[in-house]
Image (cartoon, rainbow, N blue to C red):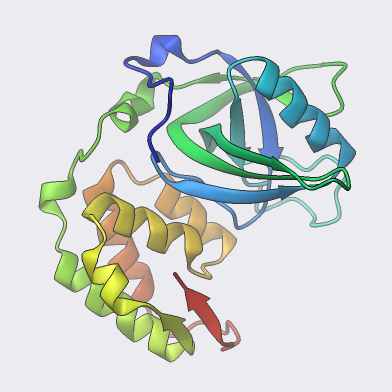
Length: 222
C-alpha cells in the first residue's frame, strides 16, 4: 500500500520508536500487516503514534524468552511500519493496517514513562529497504511458487493460486513470508534476509526442508 509520507532516506526515520513485540508476526518493507489492538498499553501507543509520525516498530520477542514473560527480551532486528488504515470498534479497540517502511536494529531500550516500550534504533544498514524491487529481477518466481505449493499441500493449506500467480514479485514474497505458518526462527530468518532475492532463496529452502512436526490444519492463504 502506498503511504502519504514516503521516506527518501533513513535519516528521515526517527531514532526512537515505540515497540510492539509479537511472536511469529513479522512485517516487511511495503508489506501490510493487519492488527487488532486491544491491550490498553498498545491502545495508548497507537494514540501517541497517530499524534506524531504514525510509526511503530514490529519485532518478535527473543526466541529465548518465556511466552509468559511480562517484559520479554527482544530479537535484535524488526521492521518499522506506518499506520495506513485505522478504524475504531466502539469497544475500545483499534483495527489497523501497518505498511512496512524499513527494518531496524535495536541499539538500546529506553527507560520511559509510557506504558509501552520504546527503543533507540538504527536503520542505516537497511537503507536498501526504502527502494522498491531491490533483487526482484533475480527471483525465480516459478521455483518459489512450486516450492510453496508443495509446502502448502503438505500442511493442508488452501490458497488462491491464480491470485498468487498474478501478484507482483515483491508483494508475492512478502505475502508468503508474512502469512505462512512458519515458526519463530524461520520468520526471523526470512525477515533478516538482505533483499528480495535472498528472501526468496530462504523461502525455497525453508519450504523444501524435511517436514517439521507442525500439525497439519486447514488454513487459507489469501
